[in-house]
Image (cartoon, rainbow over all chains, first blue to last red; front, top):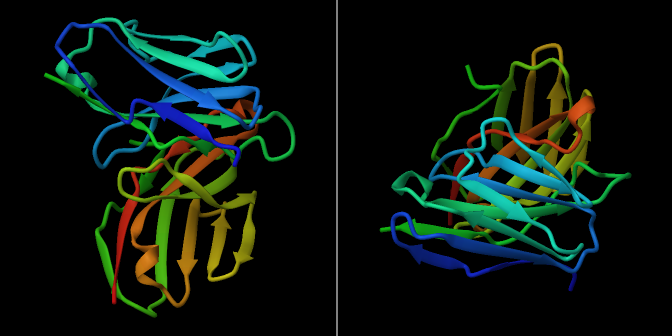
Amino acid sequence: DAMVIQNPRYQVTQFGKPVTLSCSQTLNHNVMYWYQQKSSQAPKLLFHYYDKDFNNEADTPDNFQSRRPNTSFCFLDIRSPGLGDAAMYLCATSRVGGTAYEQYFGPGTRLTVT
Amino acid sequence: QKEVEQDPGPLSVPEGAIVSLNCTYSNSAFQYFMWYRQYSRKGPELLMYTYSSGNKEDGRFTAQVDKSSKYISLFIRDSQPSDSATYLCAMSALDSSYKLIFGSGTRLLVRP
């Protein structure tokens, strides 16, 4: 089945220790997104890629970076995680044209910062 | 003021009840309206998608959009315990078509 896969599902990191979360997709969608979702809150868009074009949200902290080496993979790097960065991180994809607003989400990576 | 407001619940109903979930919004540029369902420890999945005003039905689910009131609803008929989840509304404007603005979600519990 075509899908969005996130690894790991659970990640524990120490305060200030860099961490990388990964996302892969078999849908061949050209748009990929990273969201941060804290408990009982709306998913908050951090950035998205339209093909290789990177689009950062204005309020995304500099501490968050992303890489998309090819169509299938996208990474979220948190350079110096703080306690406030503990959250669920969701990767999503969509395709241009048609129902481009239909985003397919992965299961998320729950990040704990100790 | 948040762009999208959604009652967090939780909403607890008996099996078979009709459920009404709602969102209000402030941005009149929103043209695309979606409902996502999120089970515990899972990513959101798209349930319904509506463009502009009107109703859309899919099985037990009906989505309504009232742009004049900036109000959208999701109705679930004959609710089942398997419908227990958090329901997130999401919206997008035509000129920022890749950006979804989500509500914070309403947690629904359907009791057997």
